[in-house]
Length: 418
Figure 1 (cartoon, one colour):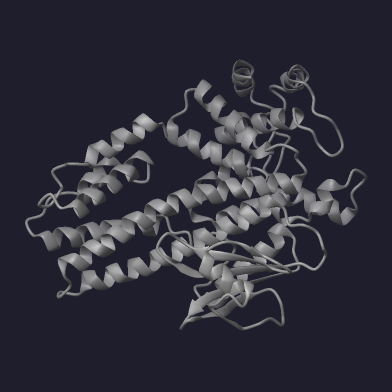
Figure 2 (spheres, one colour):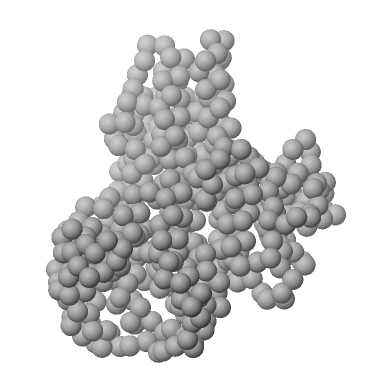
């Protein structure tokens, strides 16, 4: 979103008719609504509906809270990683298992603050410490107090948001290998995203109680409304950070020496603009470009570092990585719209591709764009088994396969932007 566009969104709702008695809290709320519009979280019509005047101040606040809770329910992130249970232990065990698999470590444990202690709520190990005191005598307590990563024999990553601290993710590995910065950034973004989502759920529960309580005060309603708008805004930022860190980790696993996923996504965005696609579609294709190799995150790093022939088992894992990625993305609510683009990115324009053998225009346009952008980015990048090709060489290869492998219209757009 361009800066001037965002500013327009803010000015649309600041100092507006929806302010109540020129209350500064109302001004902050109006600014937050402007940000929501600028970031395409809600439409202008919905923002005006949320900010519409009501004869009674309390009734108006209740109506606003109902709309905000509805926005959150559409953006819920409690399915970011692969789980389908509402039970807390199952949720956190699933998060721990996903973290362990993604960064390829021996074990992962999750502790949540309860009654002044940090209590184990999810783990991939059979035997582990159940509780820690919140003090500086353990790396778990220290990470919780400082809100910073603490690295000793194990690594403790705090789960916190701007409002409070909730717990700590602990990762263990005795192999002696150094955990890369990309993987640590990914775990940290997961920790912050879940802490924000959990805190937002608490705020939503409080809002619903206040809405149902006839004795709730205006100040209480205003307070929870301020928390909701701030947390929803933060959640959008942390979602984007999570996607970018996930893409960086995929590149790390795949052995790219540069940010292949980011390059692919940026090139896909340029192609979209050359083709005149609208902003929402362009954004979805950009995210799909970032995550088009998402299945690799579930595979061991040594598979991609192997310059020789893969074993049959390794080959099967690599062949299925797209399906793994699609399954993973289907469990991320806020990314569900990019799933079709990634599902069909391996289709060929002549109909001989996979998984469905779709042909020509029947392949989603976003998939066709990502396929071309990915091919060009891969050809111009160093890999463990070969050096990068020049731009001229890469263009010639892509041109030769236009109409058979690639959409010729997309290839033509590529030639204009590189």
